[in-house]
Image (cartoon, rainbow, N blue to C red; front, side, top):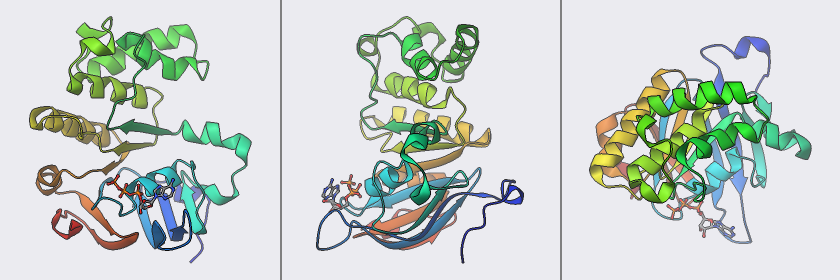
Length: 243
Ligand SMILES: Nc1ncnc2c1ncn2[C@@H]1O[C@H](COP(=O)(O)OP(=O)(O)OP(=O)(O)O)[C@@H](O)[C@H]1O
């Protein structure tokens, strides 16, 4: 069924990520993503799990329009990505917050400036930045660290800065690609609890992870990939199918 983009769909039940029979082949042979269909509703919290090479990062890169599908349709934030013009991509990506395993902070700028940077690039007025950055830092429990450089922070603190930066422009969707991959169990749980809080405030959260313990305990929707195929999609699921 074709996805119908109209105003009525932009309500609480709206699907903010839609994959319709999507495939992606980087080269000849087994596709990285093979004929995948799923939908994620506004405000959902979804884990994407699967063994190494199963296509999870490819899925994230497709959502960000860093790569194009070989076949199928992708709709994100009510936009048809396959028909989006090149010049519209930067603006589109601003509606999506992203965090990665390795934090990707600016090493020569302090915590405040790392978060403010996300606003400066889209020319948010200074007065708004001075109001919104401290608000975001306090939500992440980082107010006393705003003058610190990333090298002066623990891994958990660095990931919280990355989260503050990803969220400061109030995105509809937050994508987290292995957000706890470099963290110990205590910090991993802190980040997961923050992601849960962010989700409760209305942001759709999609988390790619290998962290079995977290997936099993959180009791969220779990999409499991294997060799490019979506092998299960369960509400309140666990990690059991991933290998
Ligand atoms: N740029 C690329 N060029 C060619 N093949 C690629 C490229 N990126 C990924 N692949 C291949 O596509 C498949 C899926 O890779 P992908 O990175 O999406 O998996 P993943 O599930 O994220 O793995 P991991 O958990 O190890 O990060 C793999 O076979 C991989 O080798």
